Structure formats: C-alpha cells, structure tokens
Amino acid sequence: MLIQIPRGTQDIRPGTVELWQYIEEQARDICRRYNYKEIRTPIFEHTDLFLRGVGDTTDIVQKEMYTFTDRGERSLTLRPEGTAAVVRSYVENKMYGDATQPTKLFYIGPMFRYERPQSGRFRQFVQFGIEALGSNDPAIDAEVMALAMDFYKGLGLKHVKLVLNSLGDKESRQAHREALVSHFAPRIDEFCSDCQSRLHKNPLRILDCKKDRNHELMGTAPSITAYLNESSQAYYEKVQELLTMMDIPFEKDPNLVRGLDYYQHTVFEIMSEAEGFGAITTLSGGGRYNGLVEEIGGPETPGIGFAMSIERLLMALEAEKVTLPVSFEMDCFVVALGERAKDAATKLVHDLRKAGLNAEKDYLDRKIKAQFKAADRSEAKYVAVLGENELEQGVINVKDMSTGDQTEVALDTFVTYIAEKVQ
Image (cartoon, rainbow, N blue to C red; front, side, top):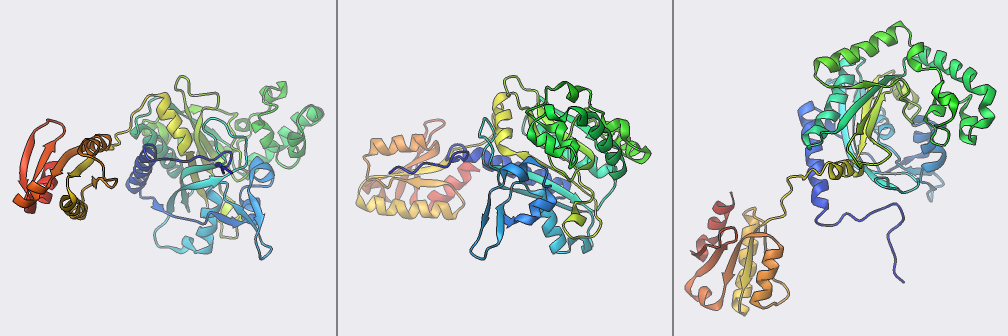
C-alpha cells in the first residue's frame, strides 16, 4: 500500500529547500543586527501552557490544537505558536534575572494547527518570530515592527504595508469590552455559536470572526480607540511618532484585532499588496502582551513580539516575482575513465571537499557522455577529466564550463588550482 503524506503538510525537496535556507540565514542575520538571540523550545509542551498562555476563547485552543495523552497520562500539545513556549522558558530559566535586559529572543521552527488547508496555510508550518521581554518603552514596539519591515524589504518585497492599532491597557480594554457586550447582546442570536459563546468571555474576539464579518453590527461596533484612556492614547501616539521618525510608513486601522487573548496596547499586521497574492493578505502579525509572563507564573514583565509564516513569505516573493540570490552551482565535477582513474577520482573529490569545495563524481559507472551530462545537471563551474593516461602522467584536464577553456593541471596541484579559481 502506498503511504502518502498527511493532509496539510508538505515535503520541501532539493531545489526548493535552498530558498528556505536562504530565508532562514537572512532571518538570523537581521536578528544579529538587532541583537536578538536564538532560542529553541520543545516541539510539544504541556497543554495547560497554551490554555493559559494563548487563551481558551481562541480558535487555536478551541479548534486547532494537536493534543494527545502520553503514556504517563499527561496532556501534551504540539506547539501551535511560539510566544507561549518562549515565555515559559523565560520564566522557567529565570531569564528576567539576567544582567542584560531587555531579553531579546528569536525562533525559527515548525508549528502545528488543525485548520483547513489552503493556499499558503498548512497544518504543519514554519514560523520565524521574535520576542522582547522586560521593557515598557514604546521604542521597543517600534523596533519590533522595524525589524519585521526591514526583513521583508531586505528580501526584495516592495508591496508590503504595516497596519497598526492599539488595544489599550486593562482599564481601556474593560471599558471597550462593556461597550461591545452592550452593542452585540441584543442581536447575538444572529451570530454563529462561537460568537455567542464569546460574548461574555471575550467579546473582542467577535470582531475577528470570519463567518459573521459581513454582519451589519460589525461595521458599527464601538472602536477600541474611542475607549483608550489618557496613558494608552499617549503610548499609542508615541509609537506612531517613533515609526515616523524611522521613516517607516504605516496605516492605522481601529478594527484590527489579533486572534490571541494576551495582547494589550500595540497590535500590528504586515500585509501584502501584491497583485494576485490572494484574499488573505496578512503576512505576519504581533503586538504587546503585558500580563502574559504573570499568567505563566513569572513576575510582572512586559513583552512584545511578532511571528511570520515562511510559507506565506514565499507566496509573496512569488507574487512579486522576486528571485532570491540562491546558487545551485557546484565547484567541480570529476569525470573518471577506467578503474584506476575511478579510484583516484574518489580521493580527489574527497580532497576537494576537505578544502571546503563542493565536489562530486559519478557513482553509477556511467560512460563519459553520461558523466558530462551529470556534470551539466549539477551546474558545475569546472569539470575535471581523469583517464588512465592522465593518471600515468600525473595530470588532469580541467574545463572551465563558463568559457569552454581547457587546461592541463598537475594532480598534486589540482585542489589548489580549483580552490583559487572558484574564490
């Protein structure tokens, strides 16, 4: 029986995986420039972490988590997002006591959500995200958004925009919450069962409902910005001022809410405006989550971060027809004729690799014509031909594939010759 890949997952094969590697390298490089350090957390965590950290009124917790019971009767969950796990590690390892503050971390890794597979959305997907913990400075909010925008721009995307909102502090959110309940309650029976259950638990989540997004009450719902208290409004204005000073364009959207319960103050999304990208334009999103560290058992600690899908980033690059500078070229392919030459080629290829070069030879006992075809497919910069006669004379013929020039090189200087040529 043919066993196929699970629905909502994908194989990333050679020829494509190099694009992923390049993107991951660029992510690590920009985090180095912004002084964010990598953290790697487990693929699975105790389910309670996500119930408390993500919020039990979210779609992620209610519908999308991969949860299982292990042999010790413990409930474990494949991580659906990165922030809760990073904060758990921050608390458990007492990183709040480190001399260097704020704590600035980044992660790259697979996440898991049971949702309907569609273009750019998978049940196993890869996120790149950052978290900055320990600072209430609006400048760190601006920095987080700047890093995300710099990353997209650095990869060559031009049609992206930053959309910004504020959810305010606890006092502001409570006032807004009461206004939302009053607004939706008289006609809540016209909404889906999810919205009905959220009315008193977390009415802000109603605004994020995909089923009822066209209901007339959605367009007239009270805006959070009308309920920001003085300090929340001042914080929001400072973030905008700093983004303007950094020459980072943004749009304000008072209806922008994020799908997780832990956000306060700044929330944002980065969207693609590329033609043909698709109906769902969001590339990444994030915001400030003051209160999450305490919820997971740590001291009162502010935090802010974002996460982006690598899959959707690749879609955006394709939509804008951006070609990443990924090289598939090989430094040298050694063609061998005769048994003794084949043995000698094995050592030559090994020596090339020890010298840090990308080298290959034939392992299928093919004729010379087929070996040259294999060299062409590998996009070799140089093809070296070694036969029995060349072996006797201690030389090897080297062909520059870009010019067609051929040179006879002594075997004992061959590796040095190729190394100098490909520098």
